[in-house]
Length: 186
Image (cartoon, rainbow, N blue to C red; front, side, top):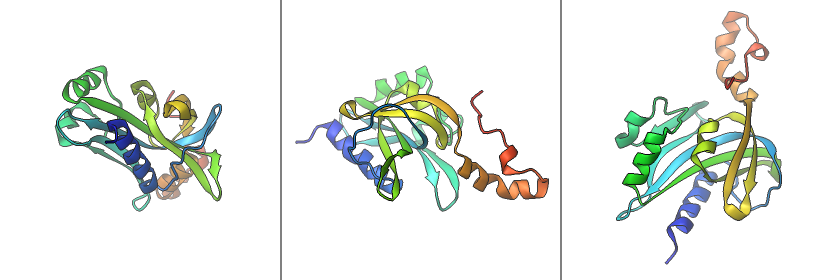
């Protein structure tokens, strides 16, 4: 019988495929520049199946960040598209579930696998989870032996996403996409 961690790792790999990037076990050394493509909290109650507490990713069709929070936890999250997890919420999750996993996905051209940008979607801790939001540009590393993503720094917002989302608003204002402040984490 597979362990719960193995089952969740399979679910994370499946989510990576749905998110449009490959989640292969390629080794990464050192820090790379990339962007956050997804954030998720997965949980496992002692007597049940895997549950998604929270899931945030970029919706290509809607060209926007789309966040989902399970109904029972909505009071703990102010903005489902840019979630941060308080210590109180973290403690409540650990009291409710047997296991809780923070998952973050980072894509980087430095992790390329052929013609597409390489992505890692894997476990992280609450600090890394809170540090960056979907579509933030980050300095990150993937620790394959630990199946862990480490966020070293947030360096701004992915520019092409920013330009696409704000282009129509800017056309009428006379402001160019290049004049937008890219670092929202001052």
